[in-house]
Image (cartoon, rainbow, N blue to C red):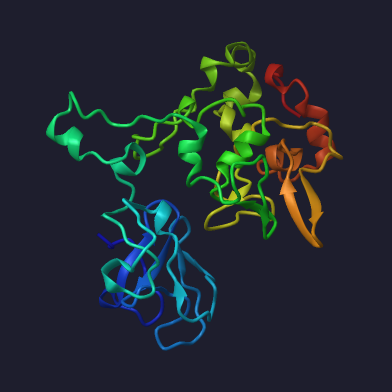
Length: 296
């Protein structure tokens, strides 16, 4: 089960009660008392978040002692905020099933299992259903910056700030598809733009809509460059004016916070691939780029 996961320094699997994640991007570890691992087993400083993509380690609240695991509401099924799972005092709450099972989205299924015809399952395709977990600041068109990149788990906030704010997540995503989870069916709605993109230089290079319109401006585990993480944006609209900044700082009650605006800037959309160019070059070539068949 854990064959592809490394462990923080000094730990063996006998020391670990749960792994948080460990499938797509990163793994964090819960010790036998239910606390998140933030240092080496001997208490010395160590990076304890394992990043699957590039086999590296990142700091996770380094040196913080007795950090409680309070993330289970979005990582388990049948969560209740009272008590401690398995009697482990570091865990906040209890749950019926590890991971995200059917009932996490569809509700209790005991009656359905006994009599499928009478006990119909709940089917909720709204933004709010997914937004229970895929946001961290409420259902608002605001996505906060975290160390220069958009916070992960803010997909709903980005969606509400962009041109697709009226869509439900399931218009593009299949929540039952384990591997990719996304259909990326842009052509269903954007046929004319897709047709004009055919045979362009980017089409011939094998690029898809999401390569430019959903750049990785959020970070869950790693950063590729200062403005590129590992989670795709859900803002979609690209602003081709080079001086337009993607972020804005707002002061509320004496506290300054930096938020993402409702568009993707040229730096994020273009320069992740064209790293030797600048925003002025990107602005020159970005407008009408779907129809261009040449390259410069």
